[in-house]
Length: 445
Image (cartoon, rainbow, N blue to C red):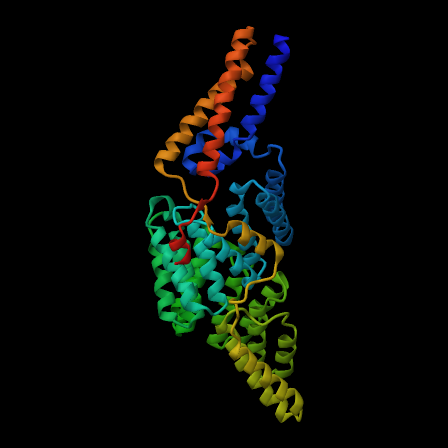
């Protein structure tokens, strides 16, 4: 009888130990880093949401972005059904994956929801605001984008989130580039390069690419050449073929220098490696146009699956279409010329409309469930409380699992202590993992 109760107790303890995953997720990384071995075991714990997160991570590692979006959507559906502590992560992940899938309108709506349902002390907040600012930039909504990035910069003054400052500065440089404030963009990118601390190789290559692109726009071609050369030295022979933005930037530099054959080689390589990207096709069309190959330029324009994102590039495409319309008119193709001029006018006047709420059922359900509530961060006192609880429960659980079975009295005492731990865990979950009600005045504001 005692052995049966002891085995049952061990199984219960094991199940509850696996159920501590959300508490570990919520702690800052430095808190649970010493328990990394335990975490690697717990992350594969049974549970539909954890399984869906693992599948989404596997899909991302294989660059299957659409599959990752589907997995996070399904996880969010389960989260809205009751396990709310996963919700802000899934809302943010859906937004980030939509951004990577080049769907900025949809991504912006999910980022807005993520912003609405998290307070400034949430560790996700800087990433949410950076993503929101980047989406709004691409949708030509520069003032709200600037506001979102300023909020992110203010949050990055905290030591816990200072690691995101580099991303904020890069996003502000991107905003300046898209709004054609090229001097400001160059200053932001130079500031990013001067930030203290080591820079990852891919971040350094991205920064060099951005610096070179800003210098090309400003007409400082010798300086742009220096940045491209530095990128090639840093990345070796694979630096440019491995990054289509670097290929486009070097090709744009060659185009500005009048070295059309070299520019064409870079753009053609980018097209071969990365497919029909709108920027690359526009560059190829522009190269052919400058070379007097108007029919070839028209062919590249016709291959564009969508217009280039961002008002800057759409205006440039509109200018190219105007030039090709003149060629069509000279060749007697008046109807084609009129269509090109009409398309150019539409590109110049496009204003995305994000004011109308989407009718996507999952987004609407998340808005309804989270209305008036926000997820908060974890204070220092709460972190100490969690550390004490988790350390105590791990020691207690380990004692039950690995120490020899005791007498009936010992088993009864262990069961009583387990009941106390379970009773404490529930209010901890409600206190730390569930969203808090927002005051009515704050909600209206």
